[in-house]
Length: 419
Image (cartoon, rainbow, N blue to C red):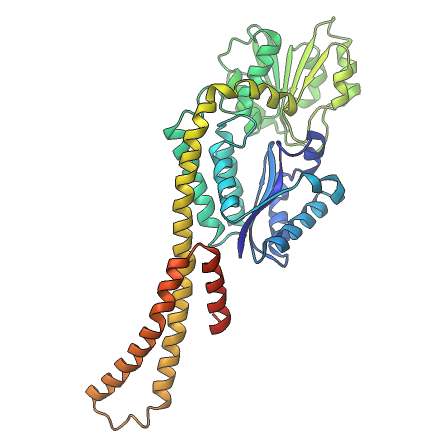
């Protein structure tokens, strides 16, 4: 049996392919039910963010699980395999665990050390728990990953300065415009990422922060807490004609602003440039809008390039983070080994005790004439023989636990004793 992770992330797949592969939060429960119903998958967690779409699974066999997850991706996003197969990555056992720990630590993010990913990992795990899609293998693995993420951010400087995609997006906009002081900014989307954008703007000297959202009450709430003004979606054309910057990150499954919508607005801007930073995945703004004179459109690809420039400032922290991950991976393997070997050994001893009890019962008539001391002697003799026979297999199982040999021994015990 193996722990596997199969998926796509910002390092392995072009944005235009990646945005077609994302799974909306509302569809995750259905996705989990689909995954755990497949032949080789027992437990599953789906982690879908603006940087990655990954399935973590406890599987009977790695190759069988890989194919199950490959088929799952193709079916749930209605994409032919040739669109994404070459971009899929797959890891198993210790490498899969190390990858999850690195994700939780922020090492695998577009913005090194970002803090948002820790909450995303937690929510993915909690959703799986709610849907009864995780159990004794993935539960402790994700719990340990969250511990790693917290320890890394406490003991290293990996999360200093810009620590989120939202902060990076605002910083990138400021760099493009030579600062945001006195600018009017519209934030489209008031979810976690949108609120992060508004929070990054708050107190930065902008002239006005407007917040638009599909749900009006949410727009009002975010705007009131962060010094902004809520606006309605049907008023977007009016505000787009007046603002300097549009920051957008909604959870919409398709484009919100088409090329024609923005082309119509530009004519009312009196030749003023409009900067759009679209960090939604899938994108909120039609990519062809970048061809409109007077519009500068930046997306997640641009943000990753921007984040790379600040990487060297925190690169020295990576070594310290990796050392923590190595230590925690060793601890996880030791604990996981104890969890896996313990029940197997207990099951073996329980089976032996059943045999012992059964045989004593079978000969109970012949033992009826024994007094209590003699009967206890016979029972102790039977227990002693069982104990001595099981001692060496138990010791060898514990010594080999966590190795390929240990897995072979475990499989042999399961098969030989039907455990």
